[in-house]
View 1: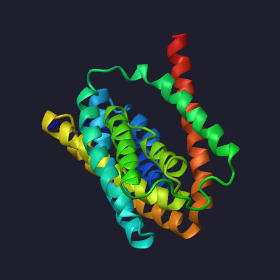
View 2 (view 1 turned 135 degrees about the horizontal axis):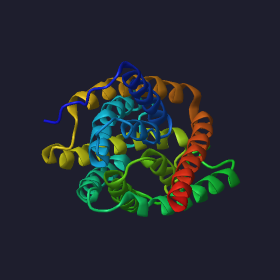
View 3 (view 1 turned 180 degrees about the horizontal axis):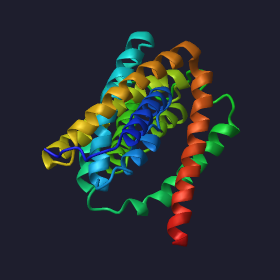
View 4 (view 1 turned 180 degrees about the vertical axis):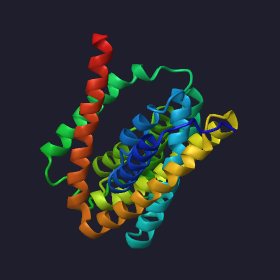
Length: 263
């Protein structure tokens, strides 16, 4: 078992605050990895794979909490969430197995372009995600949901940040859900992707347990608050937070890409 590095009080406080904020953002619309994973990378001596694995442990407590909260208060369609989550779990296991082999830097420019397209698409359609307008029926609907889960699950195991955001926009723009039920389904699927990644990371010994569990408690609190706020305020609130999170993701990734190109 990996031991937690020696951390000063300020670093611990910052890590816990980052996990709390990440849990809130993840519960509302996804993208909490944008906050929690970079914070973990500031820990002295931690490797990128250890940070990714420990981030999954911290995140899974938050996604479990928000999934339960949404299930009780929104009642997401499990006929969509079920096959999507199973496929996403398998994709996450495969993605995690590749995480130590493929440089993350190769993916950042592509992800940046995709996020920019998502933001433009969302802003250009102000009514998008305001009401349910489901596409396909029966097995066709479930097959498309499973395909989305497999693709995004693979990305989550491989890299992670923005997974919940990608799930929400796919559920809204491809399957036709409004933002609130899309976020509810996304949490169930995101729990499965976190679990899938941990199925690989735990036996491989990449998880720093003490640190991950501490972050998990803070993530859990943020997730509970965020899910209740989303349910209380509805799809319009979720849409606003979604646009803000995507914009921040673009700025963050754009900064990283520019810094790498200039260095």
